[in-house]
Length: 156
Image (cartoon, rainbow, N blue to C red; front, side, top):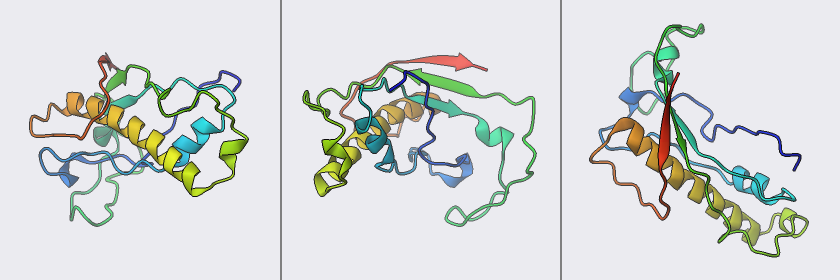
């Protein structure tokens, strides 16, 4: 509510391309916590999706079974690697967040609250899938999207 920046990594890990089949989404589940954070704000925050590609070159894992946890090649990040950052348009949540938004009412953790938080998380994941598709250029990747977005590519 103070207008500060809050950056969330919804998956909490660096995905490795070898873990995925061509056309398969690399994004994991987005849990309802991000929806809860948004609805607990007095002022509706601006939500901007950011997707990066190339972190797997900085923190690679030893390739193995896709379904089992892998070990990092090194605990020290590799320098001099290329990372692409894709920044999407702000996500419009106004149709989800009702005009009479009262964070006090939405902080009781009812089943309705959980549905609302999941709906918000799903909308954010859809926007991230658009950026993911752009980043990887997957022609076979077919996300189930109800949002549209454009992005800017930033090279670091």
